Amino acid sequence: MMKYPFSSPEVEAAYRLPDETAREGLLLLRDMIFDIARARPEIGQIEETLRWGQPAYLTPQTKAGTTLRLGVPKSAGFALFVHCQSRLIPEYLTAYPMWDRVDGTRAVLFDQVSEIDPLRHGWLIEQALTYRLRKKTTAK
Image (tube, rainbow, N blue to C red):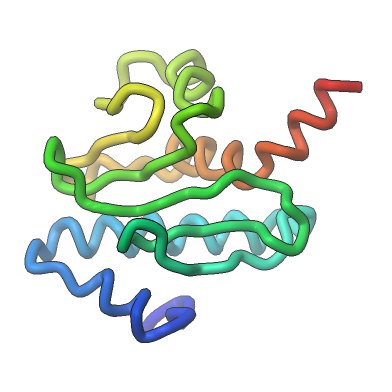
């Protein structure tokens, strides 16, 4: 049974992938996004939608975070995408150097579900979901 129901049939369809490993990995990352948002009330409710045909996760009520996207790039089995003009990937690489393959400043790339680490990838997801909250704190 799904831990979190899909927001729409269109989002659910985006997870119907021929590659079972990619589907399983993306669903695990999806659960992590909702779990982290649930654990941090200031993030608010997550909106699940499609951006560029890929599942995207936003914080429209609180505007606490920046968009996260999940998808299948050409260069890997699946990926966790962040806004490419944010500091998220550089900050991630400072906190966790040499752990993962990344695509510039826009994504962490995966080939196997076992590469997903709840600690470090959870950290990145939490940083994205609180991105604007952290910017306000550092601006003071």
